[in-house]
Image 1 (cartoon, rainbow, N blue to C red):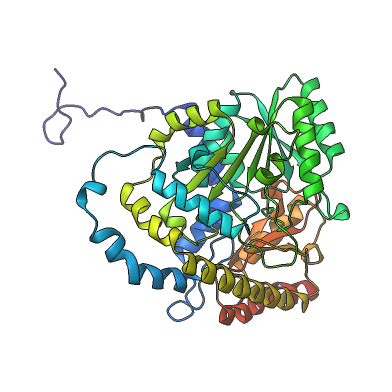
Image 2: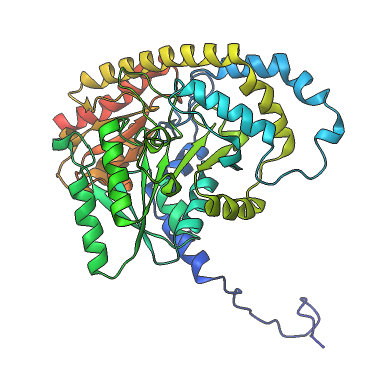
Length: 443
């Protein structure tokens, strides 16, 4: 029988060591707490900027969240939520439903994405799996396509979340394929070939290429010719191709967006090795709704992903609410048109503001961010110099951005700065804060 250790009983107290957690948990904890992402997010949470109530707080420019057209979404929800959800028969909301998503939502999503992509592709609802955000879609595909220790090739710089989404639980290795400014950050097949061959020499199995189109963090688009070459490459190597297209619909330039699904329909390509990721967090500014989509032409991947779906299914009320929104053609067309105009204006104003400090942005046609070259503000042209500048931006300028090294960029001095979390009135505030750094560099 255990003796009590309560003070005053005369029984000696015992000291206990904390119960151990898994090595996986320890590794995840350490890696996340040491990242610039964690440090920056913590600063923003502790001291968030608000023009009215906290004008000296930290300005969040690290998250690619689109708030420029939130008023349109709010208006639709205010006008329609009662009819689409509250007045619904309760039997449509509370029972168990298909864990891979309602057919009505898949059908509405297919039609909506067709509008967003200017009818470049017709999606089949039977080839779609609904997930709790694109993060779940990415991780699920990694489970379906690779075993622990296998690798995927990803053009870099790439979205920082891939390191978490592919490595943490699935144990998939990422092999960055560097793209450089001298080549306008364009992916070359020769670079893929080199990375693939080096992996094979190390005895590492390459299972797929993961890419983002439009690119995150650069904002450029992959042209049709390159997509053809990529399909030729994965066919030759007998591997898969995953295209993360969550930023489709964020176009604000003149370049044409082409989905890999469109090219895969071309005669001669094996569609079963092609998988596409979509979502509503970016295109419709609904990250809190947690809606992602896997679109695959591979029946084994679809069947397996459907089984995994029990771990990331979306609530039925959320799905029911979205069906009429996505089916509202007038709303969709209005939203797409207005958002594109606002997005382009914010991009141009932000780029213009940075140019006054001699800071150049890589020309982009899509995305909610600028890929910014701030090497002229660094004391040394190295990753250390880049992180020192990031620290100054966070603690002196009080703006939170993403350093290029977090995106595995091989050239120091590049940063991803998101401009859709603020308003036009906030841009002068951001520029004034950046001036604190430029002024210090002249001293």
